[in-house]
Image (tube, rainbow, N blue to C red; front, side):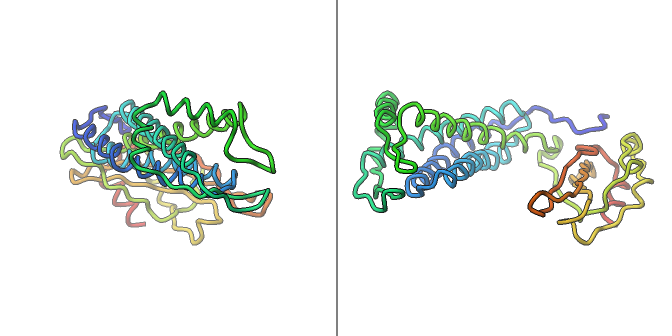
Length: 292
């Protein structure tokens, strides 16, 4: 029996159905919200975080629907779902944004900052999305002249193109890397359920003796009997124990040490280091940790 959990690389055929549902309903809604947000919020720095959030939201939706409900234990398929979902979301956001440009009306603001009032027309967006040649042609024309500025200068040409490329990479990378996380979590092939995840209260930082992997792999938790809960995990060194359990009394454990330090602003930051990841443990070991 393996000492650590290994995904089976299996998946349910329903995962494709759930992925299609996500692409038909959730992803277009996210694309609409994202396009309106970057249109009406004229702050490039804020838009950067909005773009990050858009990519994460797509990845989260794909993870919850296609990976979680679809019982995907195959990281390659999870990556593919994430990438395709992010690519679709990005494409639809371009269609919505181009339509906002087409329907732009009066502008309000100053020479330094302002917005143009606009609203999409559903069938026009649908027509643009169905004709990628026209969509990319319009994007090329917009890139030549630009539609927004920064510090009294209109952003256009290859500079605008570079911004679009960075935006695309952010959405694609973030949207792709989120879903596979779930596919690697413990799944019971017997009862076809994901394990229940439980993060225990923060314990004291593990010293070198407590971190010894070989005893833990042999379910020898004698060194961990010195564990105790800490009062303030937001500022102190501590360890995080995550238990995974199911109805068949199969258990897995992940342990992470978190070393606290102060940054230049006087804020507490943590350096994370994995002790063990998804180690198979017996029921006695699990009960011991839950009763500390």
